[in-house]
Length: 246
Ligand SMILES: NC(=O)c1ccc[n+]([C@@H]2O[C@H](COP(=O)([O-])OP(=O)(O)OC[C@H]3O[C@@H](n4cnc5c(N)ncnc54)[C@H](O)[C@@H]3O)[C@@H](O)[C@H]2O)c1
Image (cartoon, rainbow, N blue to C red; front, side, top):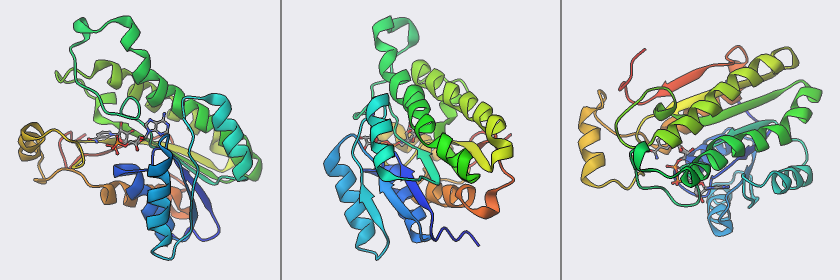
C-alpha cells in the first residue's frame, strides 16, 4: 500500500519545515521528488538530505508567484504526477498578524500572490499533462484560517487560503473523469511556527496536547498521493489535533 515507485512529485516551498517533511515522506515511498523553494539554498538542503537517505530528490528553485517561471521550470522537469502546493505563509518570510482595519489595500497582495495565485500557477503548469496521462494528484496545503474565523489578525491570509480551498474543489470536479484528484489539507498550528509563549499557549488548547509536525502532514500527503487515495477528491481535510472537530 501507498507505494509511489515510478511517480514524480513536485513539492513547492519544500526548503524547510512542513514542505521538507512532505518531500521526505513522498520520497520514502519511492517517488522522485522535485524540491522547490524560492530560496535556492533551502531547496538544495532538503534535496541533499533526502538523497542522503538513499531516496531520489532534485532541487528546483523558482518563485511560485511568477507564472512564466513556474511554467518554464515544469516544462524542463517533464511529467509531474503529484503536485503539493505547500509554498505559503505570505512570502519567503512569515508575517506579523494585524487586524484587518489596520491594513492598507497595498498589503493584501503579498498574501494572495503566494497562497492563491501561486497555487493556481503551479496547478495550471501540471494539470494539462496529468489529465492527458489520466493520472494525477494535486494537494494544497491550506490552513484552518481558510475554513474558520479567528481574532488573530490573519484575515487576508485566511481569505487567500479559503480561495485556494475553493479552487481545489473546482479542479477536482473538472478533472474527476480524467484520473486526477485535487484536495486541500487545512492545517492547525505547526510546531515550527516561531511564536514563543503564544504557540506554547495554543498547544495547551489542542485536544491531543501538541502542535503539528511535518511528519503528520507528510503522512496525509502520501495517502492522498497514492493509488489507494483515488476515491478522495474535492475534499478539505482538517489536520489540527482535534481543535476544530466537524
Ligand atoms: N506553520 C503553521 O503553523 C501553519 C499553519 C497552517 C498552515 N500552514 C501552511 O503550511 C505551509 C508551510 O508552512 P511552513 O510553516 O512550513 O512555512 P515556512 O515559512 O517555514 O516555509 C515555507 C517555505 O516556502 C518558501 N516560499 C515562500 N514563498 C515562496 C514562493 N513564492 N515560491 C517558492 N517558495 C516559497 C519559503 O522560502 C520557505 O522555505 C504554508 O502554505 C502555510 O501557509 C502553516
